[in-house]
Image (cartoon, rainbow, N blue to C red):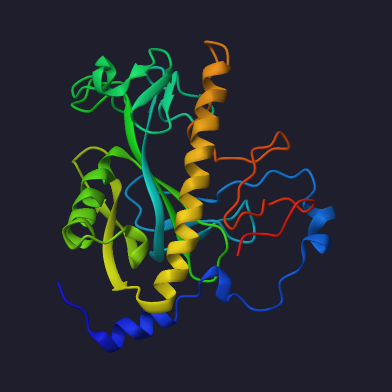
Length: 283
């Protein structure tokens, strides 16, 4: 795979990193009253059902997300996740999973334990949307991608369903692993492809590397990504501990976003928390 140098430089130069944002940012003192006590979560990108080929991306109106065919992003961080719902409830947004895992390794809830040894994490234990046995797994294996768009401060969260794991794995191998480069070292384009299996069409994510990031921009992205990854790992640990401390009948809903609270769990990127009384927004 090769890239045209001119096109590469043009693409990268057009991608606006957080510390390249316009100098009209407001100070923490000016934002303190507005942000005090609020929870900050990761906006989600949704893969639609029914085989649609446009993403639902958060816009200015929370009730009316934008619809886009493709998104160009930096994959700042990604990790495995998993969840097991009561039979027939996997597609019900109002039903939390019986067991969930923030790292795809250890499940918390019922049955809980090591995911690799769990009977529900075996092929052939799944149930489809109509309640019929399927070749898939009862436990839904996922991959959480934290994707940063040009000109934005906070990454979006894209949770890949099981059907999109294979194309993501192939993309990772071709674009990054074989070239010994981290995901945050390039700009990627993500789109959707319709798959019709004869009964119920669905969409899978498709990935393409647009260009490598080099020079000063690469150093800036590395600093951002390093700090971000550490914060997400810490949040996952706190989230797992919180879930484990809950009652046997209550499990943190894996479909919900991460949240910061006034209990000390603050999201940071540059060492400053997103809290008007404590520090600036991440740069």
